[in-house]
Length: 107
Image (cartoon, rainbow, N blue to C red):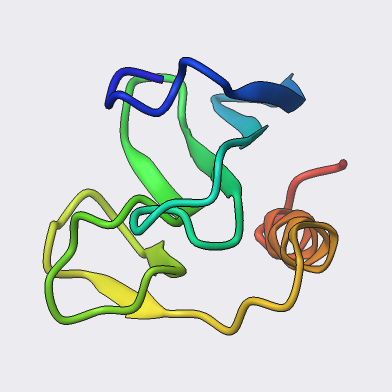
């Protein structure tokens, strides 16, 4: 995971799908509750192009001043980030998947 939270982390989701020129990568871990991850979950749901462009990504990495812990990147632009409502991981994953489908992917 790369930021010091991996000692007691348990990988609970790892899904990758490739479409025609795009891909999905969905990862989640249960981590110890902390100031960085008070819900005890860390996740990243990435939808992008196979040449490296972010189409959108949901994550809860606490490194974006001015937005909440749970947020959505709408591109690779570091300023193109918005808050998202978070109730639980399953609901957010379903929202992410539906947005990928709405973007034209046969998932």
